[in-house]
Structures are given as C-alpha cells and as structure tokens.
Image (cartoon, rainbow, N blue to C red; front, side, top):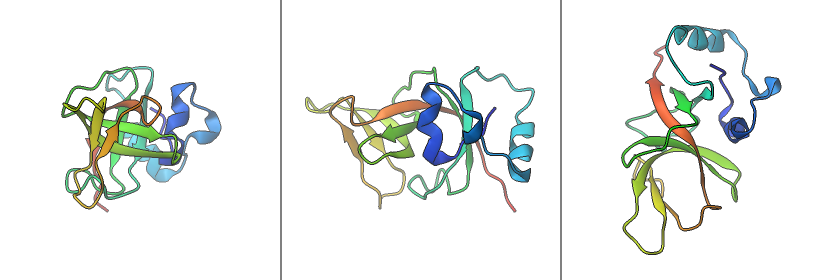
Length: 136
C-alpha cells in the first residue's frame, strides 16, 4: 500500500506516481505492518495533518483509504476541496436539505461543517477502511 502525502492524495484518482510515494523508515514500518491484509488495488494510505477530527482521529494518525467504496452515512471519507486545493478527512452525512447533496462533518467543533451543494465543491477520494495510531 503506497503512503501518500496528504497534500497529494487527490492525485491518486488517476494513477499514483512514484514521486508522490513517501519513503522513509517510519513509512517502511507502517506499510510493512499492513502486508498480508486484503486491500483493493486502489488502496492507499495517508498520515493526517490536522486536528479537525479529534478526538476520534488525531494529527499524525495513519489511515488506509479504499477509492472504490461508496460511503454510507456515518463513514469517514477522505475528500478533496478543489477551490482550496486541500485534502481532509471528514465524516460523511446525507443532507436533508433541498439545497445540498451531502454534508462533511468534522469531529472537532472548532472546524466548520462542509455543505456540498454542487459536485464540483468536493470530491470524495475514498472511504477510510483502517485507522492506526502509533505511540512514540
């Protein structure tokens, strides 16, 4: 499973480029630890870079994303916001409003809810299928 920098996660939609894959000692430990598990061909991993999903997910937690799974309400998804060129983790929620398609919820109340009213506002990159926290 390739480990991609959070800022490059949206590039995996087409093809993972070798230069976007992180390679260091910690990366090797993380990717070796998931060997033998069954993940789809399009699975990839990122290390979270903010505290928007605390307390469930913390900054520097490691998550594996499967690109081909459709999210259900309550699932955690990795999204790309093209206008801000930002990737982030949020909880997927269906919207009961006539004006929005779905909502993307943070766990940390200091971060805003993202109301998606147009498919161009946010792209769901994949569903989180595994979460790991390493204590140093």
